[in-house]
Amino acid sequence: MARVSDPIWRFTSSPSSSTPANRYYVLGATAATPAHRAAAVAVVITDVRLPQYLERSQIVLRGGDHRLQISEYDLWAGSLREDMTRVLAVNLGRLLESERVIAAPNNLRLKPDYRVEVEVLRFERESGGRVVLQARWWLLRGSDAALVASSTETLSGAPLGDNAPYDAVVASMSAVCGELANAIARSIRAVGDRNS
Image 1 (cartoon, rainbow, N blue to C red):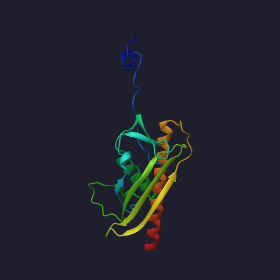
Image 2: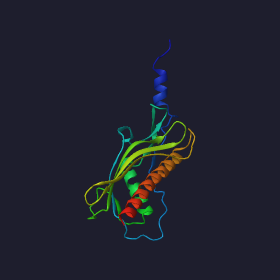
Image 3: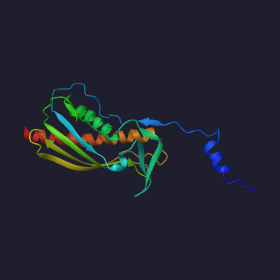
Image 4: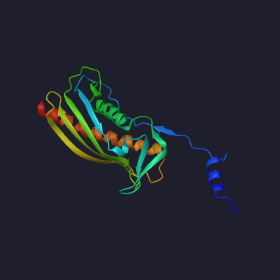
């Protein structure tokens, strides 16, 4: 007579089975560090909002239009929202050649020229192998919070393939975050040029 419990026992208790180790990732700034930083424009990144499905430690990939793949062992080392905010501030500071670009909350008594808010609509590797970042952003004047520019960006990384390692996926995610910072920096420069 067959014992029904044997396959489950072997699967969960086999001494030869082992759990893969977790791997942790962070986004990185991609803008080049300027040779000289002036005390130029002051910018505060006040908010970066993510969809709820990205507010998790696991890295999320898109398996189709409506299906997500949640990684079990490839994880963000911290909060993705805080990581994106930090990287956006670093990239903007480099692009604007300013040491006065910070992420809120911050205890500095900085009177910003501009405030930036970002709402991420999607940010994952799609089933075709490209990382896609779709985000709305608003540029507000620091003195009175008047809206001076806004845009919705859809940015795509280089094709990676469906089986690309997570290192490559996160590097591509960092690159598209850099492109978002570029778009915001161009707008800040354009507004500054109009006002000068």
